[in-house]
Image 1 (cartoon, helix red, strand yellow):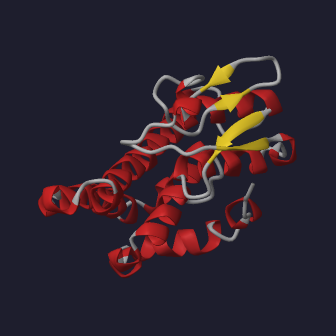
Image 2: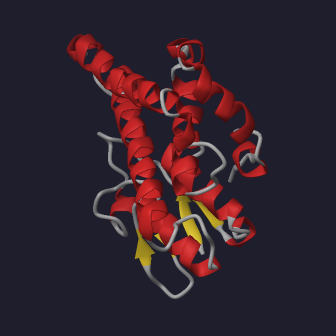
Length: 201
């Protein structure tokens, strides 16, 4: 199995954390990529018309994207439990995944405003509004600590990767002081071997 890799992509990281939790991390080959929102990588587009990472190649020749599909494929391959099969637990995990992905989408848009848009065209209010999505998501989780407690599933992994990315790209965001329940959860969840793992080509 192969995955197009960028060390700073939170969506690639999400797939790698899931693979680690499922015992598949040693079976994934990392392939170099150069995804960019403006200067699009034709090598990625050849297999994924969206030109995004992660893009995944299965051993049986399938090309899969995006992180939601890849993670579910890996869970199915390993007969894992990151995606509950049915019922309330499944919908909770998928909704939590959607919340974490939404945080990541917003953070990436804010990041692109900083590094991909010419300075003269930057829109500070747009950037602030994107980061406010992360803020309101964190406030939602902080008021409902049971949503994250005692779970290791695709929802928890996605939120964990969103927090990792906020720390990586927005160190001055300072979310821990405002959201102590989430900070307490992440202090434990972030110590899992899958979350602490480092990947490089």
